Each structure stands twice: as C-alpha cells, then as structure tokens.
Image 1 (cartoon, protein in one colour):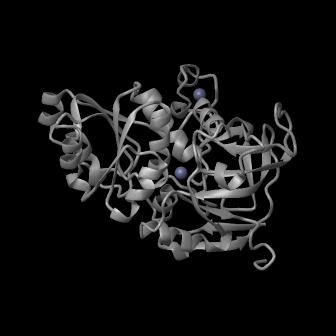
Image 2 (image 1 turned 90 degrees about the vertical axis):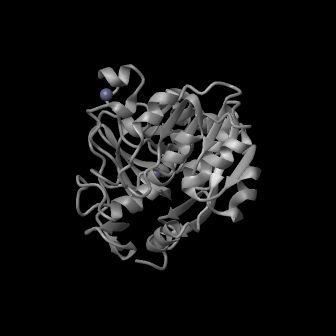
Image 3 (image 1 turned 180 degrees about the horizontal axis):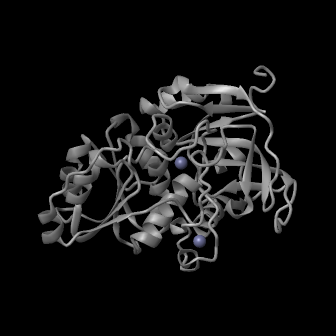
Length: 350
Ligand SMILES: [Zn+2]
Ligand SMILES: [Zn+2]
C-alpha cells in the first residue's frame, strides 16, 4: 500500500511516500481502508521531533475515516463494510479513569495513532476496536475524519472541563484554525455567546459566518484589550485557548474574576511564564483538556447529521501532497482543515 513514512524528524520533506506491506487484522482489531485523513498541527509537532516517545519510522495521522475491510478474532459489534471514524486511542473501558467517564486519562491506552502506532497517512490502518466509532452514512468521509480532533476536542473542553453554562461568554483564540472554527459552532450549540480572536483580518468574515457573535482581530498578546472593550470591561466567563503560549496571558487577562481558562492548543511548544499574583487576585481557574471521549464524538456526529454543526473542510489533497499540506498549515494558509485522500492519486503514484 501507499503510505507517508516519517523516518527522521525535520522539515516537510521528511514526509516520504513509500510502499509498505498492507497491515493485517490482529485479535481485537480491524483493518480500515482509509478514505480521508485530517492534517493536524500535532502532525507538524511530531514531524519536527516534538514528541520524544514517537516510534521511528512512523506513519503519521490520528484523524482518519474509512471502511472496515478485515476483522480480527474476538471482534464484536463491527463488521467488514462498516463506516468508521477513530478516537485518538482505544481506552480500556475498565480502569478508574474510564469508568469515571475520562477515557483520555486511561493509562492502559498506549496505542496512539501517529505516535506509538502507525496512523492514517496511508491507504490502510490497523486499529484496535476500542477506538472505533460508527460513522453515519449521511456524513462524507472527508468531513468526518477530523471531527474527533476539532469539534470533539472543543466539546470535551467546553462541556466537561469548563462546565460551560448557557448564556456564558466564551473566548476562542486562534479561531480560524481547525479547532477554533469548530469550537465556535460547539459553543453556539451549547448556547454560549462567542467572541472569536484571530491575527488575520482576512479571516474575520469566515468567523462571523460560522457563528461567532463578535470577532477580535489583533496581535496575539494584546487580544484581551479588545475583548474587555467588547464586554464593557467585564471579561469572558470561559477562554478556550487553541494557540498556547503566544495567547495564554491574553486569554487569562480576558477573563472575568473567577473565570476559567481551558488550554487545548500548544502550537509553539514554548514554556509559559505566568504571574501567580494575577491568578490569585482574580481567583482564576486554569485547566488542560486532552482529546475527546466517545460520547463527545458521538454528539458531534449527531449534530453534523442534524445540520447543527458544519465540518469546515478547506481542501482535499492526494496523499503525495502531504508535505505541501504541512507547508500550507505552517504558513497559516488554512481555514478549518486540510484532508488527505490516500486513494486520490493511487492511479498515478505507484
Ligand atoms: Zn489532530
Ligand atoms: Zn482505562
């Protein structure tokens, strides 16, 4: 099969199209023919060498959708021909974290696509059955593949971690990115008032069109000033930070006293310097939120089916254009998600 293989960390040119043996179904697992794979900023962090525990070589990709073509021994509930999307990893379902509803905290789920096991930058992916979620027929693969890592992440962060209440004001930073464009819609679905921020004035219209009540354009470190103006000096109840260190202090300063900051983005990987006095005096709460649970992704898929959430897909590219896709994402030329189709150029790239 055709696959993108990362052998050494480095620039986009390290993403090489290679011919690999097709994976076989293992006990408790399936093989999925990948029809679509999202290109996520985490893929870039992985490619640059940001994860010490990544296996090498590795096939990147943790946002795939496709059709089951082989089923291993002991698999129940899934069959050949089923349409599926993936969770980031397969939680055990039995440990303390899993039974408390926090599958992302499961310490027994060691298979992480694109890091410890091969991912979806390939024509086929081998997957444990615990990471599979059925995909309704009405949702195309290219629109479904990235929902776990965009709308699902936003839903877990806002609903479960920040305990967002109807009518509360939410700030979304880096709003034109993949998580941001879906977070705006998720926050609207949860009946919040949404203020979106972006560093690019050209993206203002797209953010309003997708559902932001207000859009603030400006330097990442100064966004709180405009947010405070937009809220008559009060600040927001919840800030969902999709960027990381460049915007984190502005997100904190945009909060009302007692407000909640949820961190889901870490684009630069830099350390974050924070003034503890600011946290203390304003009694701010800071949370991290990782990935999404099964019920988050199922809710997101239901909203898409009902027309309440629109997957924001910029473009579908062939697998051979993976390096090009990374360069586009690195140069901030993407609104929403880019998607790879591993079969688009199968006829020309052997
Ligand atoms: Zn992702
Ligand atoms: Zn578990």
